[in-house]
Length: 353
Image 1 (cartoon, helix red, strand yellow):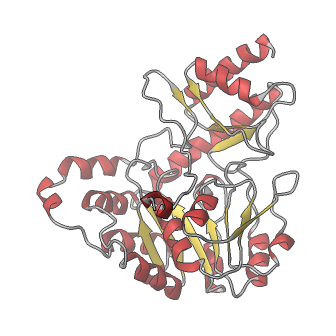
Image 2 (tube, one colour; image 1 turned 180 degrees about the vertical axis):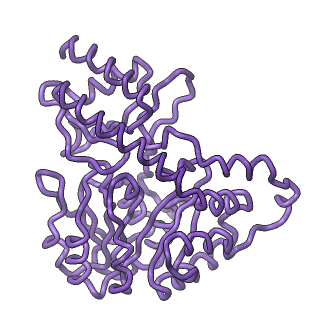
């Protein structure tokens, strides 16, 4: 009997390409085009390397307390992890343990089905409507849990708090997770609903709006009971998930609300200008409230546009998957980066198919 017969086999998540070449326009992984708050550099400049020989605080108190103050909740309502991927993975492991299918949209963050497979969680994908919206009635069936992003990825569509609350009301016996990775670019967080729903878990990240994708900071906010269960699982796997430097930088950046507002504001402004320009070029897209635009062109093949942009060292995201194989997800970069994109698209469209 081969040892390979006992290997857990899954189809892994495919991250966005990280090109190793220089002089590129990188609009494919929804990174923030602006640097972190200046206070982060001060932490880096003054960090005592000798601390690296010691284990970090397993409770991550400096970061947890800063998050609690920022979001006006109790520290024991917060769970932190190595990016929101780590947080969501831990939440899957903690809460999705029934024999019923968990539910998430058919067009959504493509890590959800990977986690379900690796943890052997049964799942059912729920089709979005033709205009890429969630129909809450589709989630009023027996299930083992629910998760979806808001705004959705890769579509950028923002759902209302009323719709989310409708799903929560219909599912008192399931944990409902709302992945708010992009909420700071024009959405309204469902955090206020935590006061009414003990089964709601809200997940956010420092990777997008706080320009710290390279430091990997994610967090969840929920009822004290939910967070305790997550910490019990975490401390059964790895107590020391957050390093000293990341904890300090994460806590410090939360203090600079003005920079945070300025950075996200610039991206929102550039996004709205990009919508106008893409429309002029003939592209169509859902109204995005994220830091990307999910665009298609009725007269041109998305895969070919993707390749021609790549030849010009402009990287966007493309999936050859049902329902979305004629769409490109375009991260909102700086105005200069977006202008290079528009100039390239004008050339490509002029060349024809």
